[in-house]
Structure formats: structure tokens, C-alpha cells
Length: 558
Image (cartoon, rainbow, N blue to C red; front, side, top):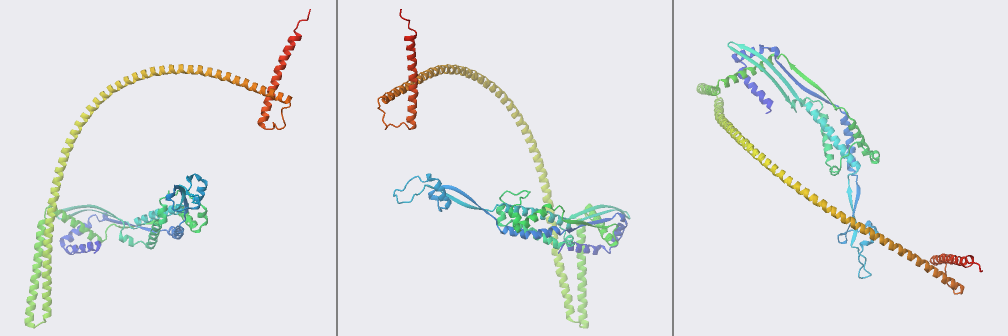
């Protein structure tokens, strides 16, 4: 049974007992008249009208997105490495080309010259399939965008279209005889996903289409291709319009769908608030709402005077009286029927019907007794739960006290430990200061000793540098003298060779078989010529000096 049906049936059963009662009628009428203009009930529902343009655009574009995904675009990525020959299972063209360029991979010749050359290592190529091409990443980004685009609008439409809100205000002051009741209440309710509000929606077919789009996008996102592409970095706008996106029809339509949803700025729906107000209440409604005052008054009076047990006893006694009265009436009917059967000879069927009715009554009485027993057990369980709750409260109070004592002890210990820590810190700081001073003195002594040693090493270095410079100067002088000697010897050698060639040429000892056309022989002959020129110059200068000495400077004879 639906909850609303159950509550409606219970309210009708309640009204059966109070509707004709004079006291209840009097209190209800007084309640209805009191401040009737302040009684107010207001309900609000949102009617959501979905715009169909974005639904049509997505429905038209999704088949092309699915077609583009089914094409499974990919590119082949090659990865190569040089591996030992034992691990090579397949030799490709790339392996042979690599071996032709890297002969160092063949380190030994076969023992038999007729055997094949086998390298120690070989280049192998592994071809890997990669689906993270730009177009696939674009499709994944588009599907994610569509998922968020649809979910945002779908959730908002459901939230607005299936929400029910209601306010109720009753403020009354009622005087009946010696009783005065002041009743002031404010009631507010907000229910989401309300079934009766959903039934009022005129856009059920559009909502179904939106749900189909949601499922389609979810299925496409869970395809193997999209799951693999999801591991690649997500694309970010703007989108590069590659040749495939511009030329392929499916990708072209998918790109058009992306442009549409990316530029769509409207919410995609319109909301109309439907308000219904009752102020003041109609007569029937006011009479039913007055039952709130009557029932509230009874419950407050019952619990305020602790009458639950007494009223229960009275209720059970009244129920027993009514059952006994009903049983007495049934027995009287059976007695009268028996007399009529004896006097008038009526049919046995009517008598059996009355007996069956009495049996049903007895069965009902037994069921009620069982229910009363169950109620008693329930009340005992409720009392046990109440005692349990009280014990739990007492335990919690004691636990709170123990916790407070523990926290106080903990705080005291914390303060004590903090004082000890502070003292230890002060002691440690003093020791650290003393140790720091000692270390500073040691560092100062070590620095002075280091500076002295560095000065000594610097003096030694300067002395060694001076000695090295002197030695290098002597070596340079020796090299210069040696070079001069070598130059003199080289020149002397050329002179002697020139003289030799001159003597040989003078005596006709140079034959035609000797070739001076080569570069080396030509250079040698040229050096000899230069040496001969120098020799002629030197000898000519000596001859001129001798001539001057003998003829020009000689004194004439007396």
C-alpha cells in the first residue's frame, strides 16, 4: 500500500470517531472561526519546458561521432634496439641495412671459410600501433564535453521539474468555556523527485531522448579505442583543423557538433513556477485542518498529565465491553434463530450463517487478543529500550566525567612535561653555547696554523718558481746556441754540396742520368745555389779586402 493511501485511510478512520462527536465538533467549529483570515497554505511546483534545438543537434551529430570512432585511426611507431644474436627471432630489411652500416657488429670469422658470417649482435625493429592520433583525441574530448553538457542540463531539468514546495501557517486563539488554546504553527516542506510532480510534466518524451543520449555518450566513451585514448593528454581548445577534420565527412560533422555545443550559451530549458494558495481555507479544508488543533490538544494533555497508561486501560476495557456486547448480541440472535427454527421451521442455512458469523467474530476476538499481547510485548520492549537509553545516558555521563578527569590529569602532566622540556632546552642551550665557543676557538687556531702553513708553502712556491725561471732561461739560451750551430752546419753543408757540384760540373762528372726535376731535388739544388751565392759573396768580400790592403793601402816605394 502506498504511503499516501495508508495515511488517507488512517485519517478517514480517525474522522469516523471524531466527525459526529459533539465535543469534537464544537472545538473544530471554534477553531475554524478563530483568525480564519490568517490561515494560509501555499504550494509551488516548477513546470520545466525543454528546448528541443540542442537535443536535435546532438542526436544528429552522435551517429557521425560513432562512425568516426569505428574507423579506428592509428599510426605505426617503430622502436629499434641492438640485441644479442641469441634473442633475435626475426630479421627484417632494417636489420640488414643497419648491419651493412655497422660492420663492427661482426667480431669473428667462421672457422670454415665456406660458413656464413654471423654477427654477435643485430638490430631489430619493433612496430607498435598507436591510436592516440590527433583526430581520436579530438573525439574523446568531444565526448567528454558532450557528457558534461548533457549531464548539467539533465540534472537541472529533473531538479526543477520534480520539486514540490509547500508552506502552511496557522495562528489561532480559541476560547471554549474555561479552556483557552493558543495555536501557532508554521510548516514548510520541500520534496525532490516528487512522483506526483513528475506525472505533471509534459516533456516526458524529451527526457527519455536525453537519457538515450546520455547512455549513447557513455557507451562511446567505454569503447576500447576511447579507453586507450583516455590515457593520452587531453586536448585543449582551440582545435587544430587538420586535413582529416576538414575532409573526412564523419569527422567534419563531429567538428560541426563540437562548434555547436561549444558556442551554445542558453540553458536549454524554460522554467515556470505554478503556485496554488488557500487563504482563507474552504469549509471542508478548514474542518480537516482543525483536527490538528484537537489532536495536538489531546496529545499535550495526555503526556502532560501522564494519562497514557490510564487511557490504555480504559481503551482495553471499552474494547472488551464492546466485544462482550457484540458476542451477547450474536448469542441472542442465535437463541432467537433457534426458537424460530423450532417454532416456524426455518431453514438450517440461515442458522449456519449466523454460526459462521459468530465463529468469525470469535476468531477476530482471538486475533485482537494476540495483537494486544504483541502490543504489550512491544511496550515492554519499549520500556526496556527506554531503560537501556537511560543507562546509556548514565554511562555517557560517567564516561564524560572520567574523560574530563583524564583530560585534567593529562593537562597537568602536559604542563609538567613542558616545564621539564623548557629546563632541558635551557640546559642544552647553555651547553651548546659553551661548545660553540670552544669550537670557535679551535677553528680560529686551525685558521692561524693554516695561514702560517700557506705562507710557508707560498714562499717555497716562489723560490721554486724563480729557480724554474732561471733554469728555463738557461735552457732557452742552450736551445738558441744549438739552433745557431745547426743553422751554421746546415749552411756549411749546403756550401760543401755546392762546391762539390761545382767541381763535378767543372770536371764533367754530372751525367744525363741525374734528374733534378723532382720537387725535393729542386729544393736541394736551390739551397745549394743560395749557399754558393753566399760563398761567392763572402769570398768576393775577402778578395776585395785583400786587394784594397795590397794595392790601395800599400805605401809607394821610395
